[in-house]
Image (cartoon, rainbow, N blue to C red):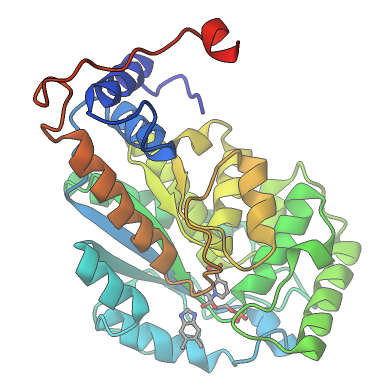
Length: 351
Ligand SMILES: O=C(O)c1ccc[n+]([C@@H]2O[C@H](COP(=O)([O-])O)[C@@H](O)[C@H]2O)c1
Ligand SMILES: Cc1cc2nc[nH]c2cc1C
């Protein structure tokens, strides 16, 4: 995981500091590397991730008309109304973890003003990509811009670590379509049951995606066109959040399949962005594994999560906090009056 502007000297120093903690070498596994990467992004060996938040992009998807989800578009409005009041799953979990929730309406199909939700509505839901592209290029770029601005605002307010989340009925269909277009995998490998589709629904979802990919002839090398054509405003907003992480030097913890497809889009638009990303969990949606592999990221939690809203990323925030607590602690070989372990050189280790 290299990016030129990630501070490699800080990364190496944090690795050394971990070896000073009284534990077997590499005892905290990938968490040691993740903490090192967070420090390298911040440019300091002192890990401060106290102020953190999950940015939740909310939008409707026209493709829901095709019967690809168990619920209708009106469900998004109901969830977003509760999200603004802290009454949905992510609100409860983030409060426990000590993270703020920042919900953003980038395209919910309702005129309701949602208290507690930032109103950055671009349009009332996207087009149905079975009939016409989801968004214009202008709308897509506007949503990306909003995501970047949200991160820049968070940076100004002192946030040190951000997570992504979303709410939008139908967004596992847009995500699967984008994942297939971006990676070239089969639609059957990318599309899953989302928020709870039955066998017939899943068959229909796969067919709708297959037909659209055939019709639009999307190419892997056209991430922006893929996003405009079969994506959604939530995914575009989250793409902006990942780009914002790279621009503002804030690590971004990705949630499930929708966040991961935005992460890959950001990486394809600006190679190197992945150095600022942390994968939280392996969503139950099958595209998630394909996307993390493509990004070279290793999700930590493997629990079949498929909730969305940023809930899996919020769980990861608390795990990172636990790892950070040990890293900053006085539990060193010196305080325990023990001789530190020696790290063998690679050749000795491989013998
Ligand atoms: O994060 C995931 O991987 C995930 C997997 C399945 C479902 N979801 C959530 O469920 C909603 C989309 O499901 P669907 O079936 O309407 O496409 C949306 O609001 C997501 O937050 C999220
Ligand atoms: C209740 C509910 C909550 C959600 N959170 C994210 N997607 C969701 C879908 C439903 C249906």
